[in-house]
Image (cartoon, rainbow, N blue to C red; front, side, top):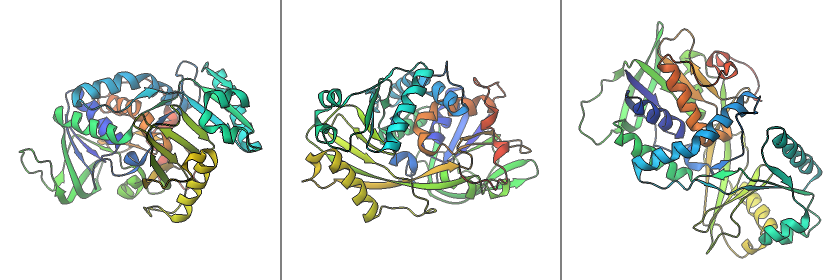
Length: 389
């Protein structure tokens, strides 16, 4: 079977890697550089999850992916010899407002329902375990804090590099800077290549302008709706911009992830400290803004005063793909015999990649997927006028 994967983010690379591991002939095309979209901009937080007790469809998919992750990363590491920084670091959840305190309490109660170890942390315990944040803990801003054991992190940029290397080692042909469009011809989809900026450097026959693979998997992230207008998906996903800062310190100020609302610190072992993030509906407008970076920096300094005399070393942004109903869109396109889609993961693409890849590969091969999740099927996404959840 010959499969074309359209989209070179973590989802597309993961699907290609899974299919190649099953003996399929795979080509991947990417409109820019592999990992240049939301995947490369992500922080790599893997929050706790438990498949055995999860009831919500997205929690079930997350729980399955959470189980797969260590083995999945180990296989990619063996193939690529790249360390992607996967580690179980735990996470603190902090609250500076009454609303955030209610959210923290609700999260702990929900984790307990799922059988996930989590606990409320007192002010004194937080100061003992996170001395770098003692200033915040002693301030009137402290409303609540919680700890969860099973929070992990991974370095997305390294994960992209490792997946790319593993895919190529497995025989996947990867072409970057490919401009093209999906076209519908009866009950089939074709991918029409309009320009190839940088084909795979390995010797190979030139691919015809119009690709007629046995299966096409569209993994275009926020651009999926644009790429699949002919298939009624143009309203199914919108881009949500997130912005990030990075400080390079001599050593990490703490070793666990620290969350407060949508904002967070992610410490790396090399002293890098990531600070994010935000959710902006600005269409496909890339880039950072001084206003948002200032807001992120002010928040970070308010939490961690040692940053006050430092300037960030780097900043960037990414466009997250938000599906119209909040669930990723995974599966076969109805009435199109050879088209499958995997997109709409919003802030969870890095975490959901292994389970997504497994599900798509099972569907392509005509197998029953591991989880029965009809709520994620692609049929619901066609010609929707619903608002984003």
